[in-house]
Image (cartoon, rainbow, N blue to C red; front, side, top):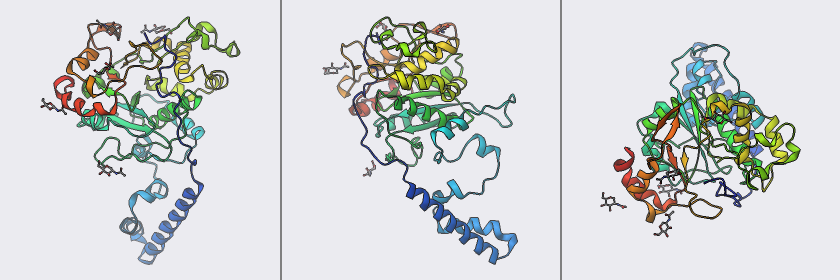
Length: 388
Ligand SMILES: *[C@@H]1O[C@H](CO)[C@@H](O)[C@H](O)[C@H]1NC(C)=O
Ligand SMILES: *[C@@H]1O[C@H](CO)[C@@H](O)[C@H](O)[C@H]1NC(C)=O
Ligand SMILES: *[C@@H]1O[C@H](CO)[C@@H](O)[C@H](O)[C@H]1NC(C)=O
Ligand SMILES: *[C@@H]1O[C@H](CO)[C@@H](O)[C@H](O)[C@H]1NC(C)=O
Ligand SMILES: *[C@@H]1O[C@H](CO)[C@@H](O)[C@H](O)[C@H]1NC(C)=O
């Protein structure tokens, strides 16, 4: 069904406008800003007696300066478990190398010295706008303790959402992505790594701007948290678009019989997410030898998991997509196509899937692709067919 298509990423051929990388002047400005805040506060504090020092510096700076501008860098770094396991700020100045290293630290001790409520990390990979943000917000509402949201887009994109939205302030430091190149894998690893910094994130699901949920949050949460397997599509296809994309240069590190293909829209357990972020050897083989018409995002993770962690993978995707029409792209559903029946058939069309070695009627939790103009109708039917 999916296998015969040349591309599962519909975004092929779109390139982001070039925009400057991290601007050094912003960094410099921030340092100067910190110095001013710090020295200003310290002088004031000292002059008013040392026992009030701490109180005054924190109080006065908060009155004169907007909190967000300095807390990221200037906060006195106290080593509290809370800040360590749940980093308060999503923004950071880490390079990918530093970030990936930090993200792959694994505790040696069993258990946690705090009450850990496992969370599902929703990783949104988008060029910019998220037309279905209102639908997702309704999906997330009331379940704040059980999820985290991360978004990767073009650098410096500003998402226009209200402070009450689950997407507010959830934009990770992003880089340019050109679809079909290894930079797409980079952005996936960057999303995973940022989400790994929060030690409570247990499951990691990659979604696009054209994805929607088809079940309510409690169902999705239970399904993912209780699953023994990750949901990464991974299959062997004896065709030019499957095995044909294998390069002999990958031998002997990767053998043809180990080569796999699958949709980029993965769902990973925490241990596998760490392995993917930590891997450099196989990543670099893909970045060298998997170039169009080989697409790393369709082969790297499916092949890597097959080689090392096949037993932990369900080998199927939980994101529904319609390849029934011929052509290189999956079908897009717009407002004229949205019906209760359509959503119902995605939720359950009579086919059963294996889940923890048993059969279930729930095969898909999410679906793509939907056009932005489908939003109003979808919002109109959520309570009737999706229970939220
Ligand atoms: C942001 O969204 C609000 C409400 O939807 C709208 O009124 C405002 O014009 C938007 N701002 C920008 C910069 O797009
Ligand atoms: C997925 O495929 C692997 C081979 O890579 C296999 O070992 C594993 O059992 C499969 N998973 C399930 C749930 O069947
Ligand atoms: C959506 O509806 C339009 C108009 O009825 C139709 O042409 C198109 O094939 C439909 N698309 C899908 C994906 O069903
Ligand atoms: C149900 O969906 C599966 C997967 O998309 C498809 O293979 C199957 O043909 C569908 N069955 C029916 C009865 O439509
Ligand atoms: C939403 O559904 C109601 C009936 O439940 C209908 O009257 C209304 O027109 C619908 N709105 C849209 C935008 O389709």
